Image (cartoon, rainbow, N blue to C red; front, side, top):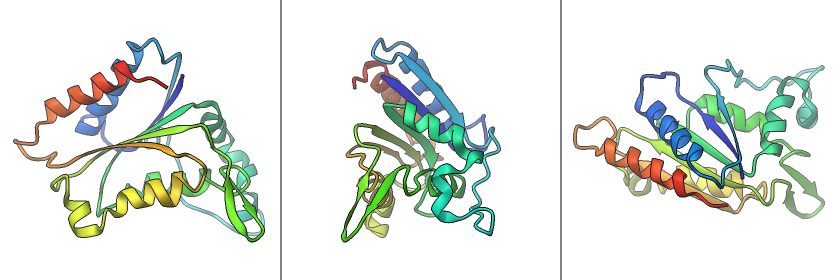
Length: 195
């Protein structure tokens, strides 16, 4: 299995970074994971801004040379792991900008006249690990679980990815947030992960 880990948090002295380290440690101990790549969007200075003009047209995003290496990473991966915080009920703008550019028509999906678009990333799977300051069930109670709907239905299912697993960890700034227990859960999950 080839694993692509996309880390989206601007601080390496953070709980999100600790989750990244547990993913990496567990993955390196897992004989099912043959290859591993990490994309740190902030460290990479990824530009999340969409630019459409005379030279850059939206319909040509699937061929944009500026993001070719990121398309190659997605094509290469069997499983994609996203690590990010939930801010205001959704992932950070940096990650959303990455999604806007990478999950483009004629790369991630293909329009079909009069039909639902054809997902072109079938066979891949996704794991989302997210943290939030509020309680774990806050997005479900107050936001109709908009985060999961956005990520699973509006994005991953649209591009053909049906196997999506969520780890949503709330109360992460609380002394009673059970951070160590949650970090250990992620480590063990990746240590035993199968395709």
